[in-house]
Length: 120
Image (cartoon, rainbow, N blue to C red; front, side):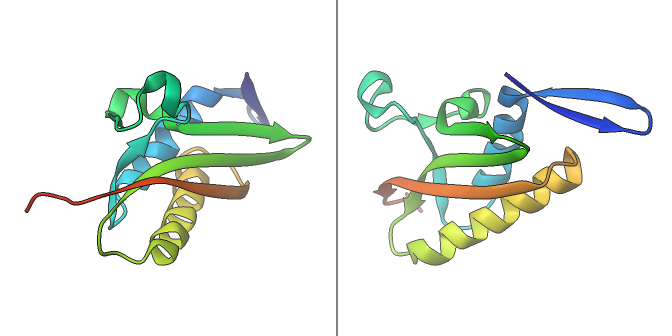
């Protein structure tokens, strides 16, 4: 599935996987994020932290009418405030998608799939 955008130069089609990769990259840059988790924990493995090339497994891009909704599955670092991390991820993902792809995102839903103790 793709997101279709029209501007004065013509039509642009952006695949959902591309949007998911950009959103996942923006999310893992946020403080307190250990990594992305798979949306299919039972099938893909409960403790799997996704690598950069697999971010699309942890992000769902939905298009309802003319609005884009993103569901993200993340793993947070132990000892951090989850609500603050989730809000930061929502803001950063919305900002990065607007700046890099030109998409206005209606919602960014965060699902915390686990808490990890990071090795210092």
